[in-house]
Length: 348
Ligand SMILES: Cc1cc2nc3c(=O)[nH]c(=O)nc-3n(C[C@H](O)[C@H](O)[C@H](O)COP(=O)(O)O)c2cc1C
Image (cartoon, rainbow, N blue to C red; front, side, top):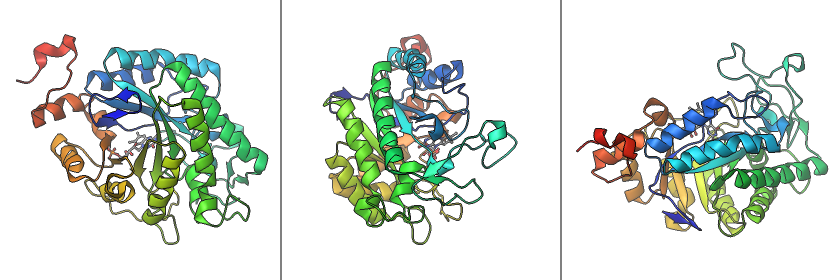
């Protein structure tokens, strides 16, 4: 698959997954081994976890970041390790908004981290808390401009670290999604109300990241194509926003769902988000990827052949089997670049 100047070796990709293992936003040895193993395992593209563009945009105190140059320098050898193993690697640029400053999953606590334990005040489109979390402050115009600049600066550092793809995290109830959804955005200025206004920040960020990326580097946007809740963001709105994002320089819409409100109701089953990808893809007009309980090669291939998506992201299957790409290719009878060092183990 070729996107701008990038040719990916296949369409089975590693979905971004937070490891909650960074120190001061710096990726660690864990990240190096974790991400490199997928490159050995046949991934066409690896997208590194939600990486905060500003410190207050971290989901947890243990998130990775790209808000300073030390973080850029820590990412560079990880990117090189993926490249040395024949894969391309992107990074998901993120701001968690009102879902920032929360405990990591195995902290033994849940919800917001208090200031006394290293938490920080959060921001959002409106002063409406995610159920059970601390109340955020509504961003003013200067705060919004700082978010856009934060994404652009982090994008520049990502390119300097060698990343091949920049993905903007507009999904899962984080800041850009909070602006998109009428459930979390009650603003009455140019960033709230109509769909055009609710999408304004995502589109400004997309344009800013595209300006940094130039003509060669692919920019993806991950969205939640539905809030799975009454009165929330809808698949039809997602399709319109996808069009606008492509017009502002996005190359592919990575279609996920949910995460905005605790009272969401999701019917989770194999491939449950594939129809959303098809809605956003609009018959091929908008390059799109599917994700969500896609766990074997035949299933992933069927998604591609059906025309629902241009590529398949998998998350947890890669954690169960870091060589998922090699296995899927074998099961499909496809050739895939095995590491020379592993050739004696190749299925025949
Ligand atoms: C450990 C873990 C961490 C995750 N972190 C992120 C993240 O940083 N950004 C994101 O967009 N999605 C994140 N997700 C969601 C995955 O990218 C993926 O969309 C989801 O797991 C569904 O795909 P799957 O069924 O193949 O795992 C995470 C999922 C897991 C399991």
